[in-house]
Image (tube, rainbow, N blue to C red; front, side, top):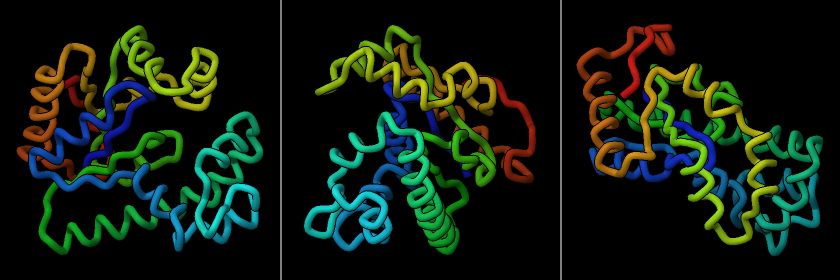
Length: 208
């Protein structure tokens, strides 16, 4: 199992799409969160109790909820205590289903993989990374994004340098899509040719 992670604006979603194009099954933690908070989602009742103003017509208003927790560490911690176990359970169901189908290699796409301890589920972790100026150029084009908001988001995430240090593979995404694709293909080949004997076995691998 390959864990895929990276800080905001580093190209993780693009990398996940490339892995899908290679035929790998990818569990998207962000998509799981959206399902959990949609109408009828498993997280809606608990979020309604904790943040009643953020639930409208049986679904979570993600924008209102985000504004509520963004600058409130205690509120964010309460929300994470609701969501993280449910996302983890959804990932386990995905893993079990793919194992039943006989998949030898699957991907867990998790933005906060290290921050939530999710790397313990994985045989190896790939971190997507780009220079800081590339990250800023990407993120600051998003609607409503400012340098101050980006700084606050960065403060909530493990620094990119720490993620790269803890990764089994580092996939550079600032040199163009073809370079990133080649790096990901090398990662997949290494894992298929030399499957780890245990999750996060400590075998250090070179950057992809």
